[in-house]
Structure formats: structure tokens, C-alpha cells
Amino acid sequence: MDNQSTVSERKKRGNKIALIFVAKLFLVYFFLSEGNKFMFSATSPGGRFYHPFVAEHFNYIQGLRNILIIPSTWIIKAFGFIAYHNATELMIIDGPILMVNYDCLGLGVMSFLIAFCVAFPAEWKAKGKLLIFTVLTVYVLNVFRISGLALLLKVYPNQQQYFTYHHEIFNITIYIVIFLILYFWIRRHTIVLTSTTI
Image (cartoon, rainbow, N blue to C red; front, top):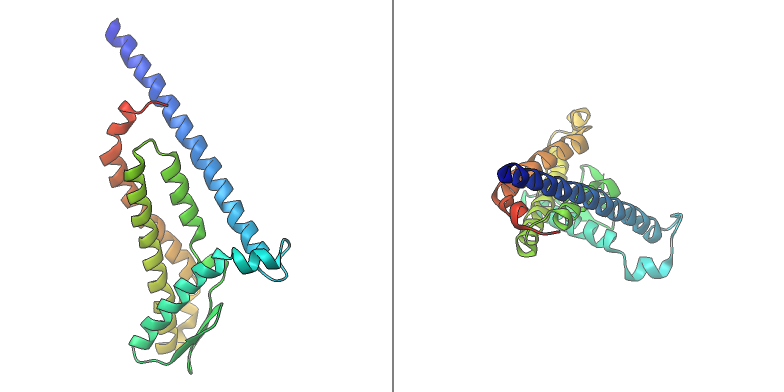
């Protein structure tokens, strides 16, 4: 009887931890996702919530765009092509012009990763390492996607129709990579679920 009651208590505790995890995950993700959309509007001239002070001093959207466009330009130049960039575009001479817009930044998956790390019941040190590793993975893959797409469009200009779905392919690839990382990380840290108190 004692064993049954212990198993029942563990199940209840496990269910409570799972519900709290899911609730935190959705709340934090929603807050970050909507916050990013608001900041994009607040920092974009013509945006519904545009404010010059916010655009000048808190424009992390443009900062993220810069750290994607600049290394992508370096990679293209390393292949011997002449490339330039401005705040939103990357251009190869006699080749394509790529617009790096909000959807290219990977903020959705980054918001999910932050929400997961905040919500998951594990040590903060372990979650911090996971967050740094996964965000860097998303960033590096995104730089390779942007530079790779520009190079493909330069080398195969007549095949542009085959690169139409690069966003979808990238998103699927990123989520597969991230879920594999999370799967193995969760397997390693599930022991925390039996000892963590809420």
C-alpha cells in the first residue's frame, strides 16, 4: 500500500511539474514572440509603434541583422566574388540582391529556445550552456544559409525557381537539429525531474 501511495504521489508530482513546464513554456514564448514583433514595429520607420528614440538606442533587431549580413558577405568574398551590404541587403556584383528581413533572423526559434530554458526544471548552469550552444548553432546555420543562397543564385542564376522554398527548408532543418539537441539534453537531465521541487 505504501508503495502504491508513493507511486501515486510521484505521478501527481510529475504531472504538476509537466503542467508547470508547459504553462511557463507557452507564456514565455508568447511574451518573447510578441515582444520581438513589437520591437520590430517600434524600430522600423513606418511601423505602427515606431519611435525614433527606441529605434536609435534599443534596436537589437538591426544588431542581429548586422551580425548575419556582415559574416555572410565575408564568406561570399572568400569565394572570390565582389559583394557589398547595407543595413538590410546583401549584393553580389552581377549577381543576386538578398533582402534580410525580419523572417530571416531566426527570432522565432530563438524565442522558443529561451522559453524552453526558462521553463525546463533543471539547473540554471546546464540550461545556460544549452541556450548558448543552441543559439550559436542557429546563428551559424543561418549565416551559412544566407551566404550559401547568395552563392547558389550567383553561380546558377537560371535555377532561381528551385530556391523559392529556402525559408521552409531552413526552418525544417533548424527544428530537426534543435529537437535532436533537446532530445539528448533532456535525456541527460531528466534525473532533475525526480529531485526538483516546485
